[in-house]
Amino acid sequence: QVQVVESGGGPVQPGGSLRLSCLASGSNFRIETTDWYCQAPGKQRELVATITEGGTTKFADSVKGRFTISRDNAKNTVYLQMNSLKPEDTAVYFCKVGAFGYWGRDSFWGQGTQVTVSS
Figure 1: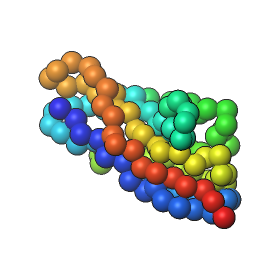
Figure 2: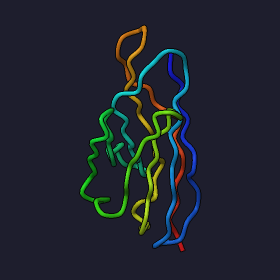
Figure 3: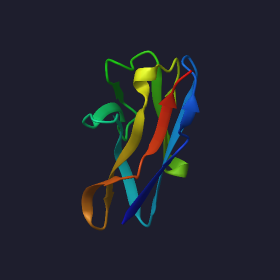
């Protein structure tokens, strides 16, 4: 079906930036809505940002004005640009890809990428 791989995480100082990538691969599918979630230790997974097939975006209040989300349909890749990072942004970031294919519609998760914001 669809395989999802996140990349781009790592350590960064407060105020720094990272760009996360979410690559979806497979055969004969179309990406619809893609979401980025984060999960900090001991906390529930939270929705951070969403981008629809048409390019409409939505953000959690905690990241508005600091994060942007974009997609490159030719590369089946969605990006999360994270600026002005704060220690509280430290979490594992997961990508959820909503896709339509021969199987119908389903959502596919990646394994996550760790973001650590610390001085």
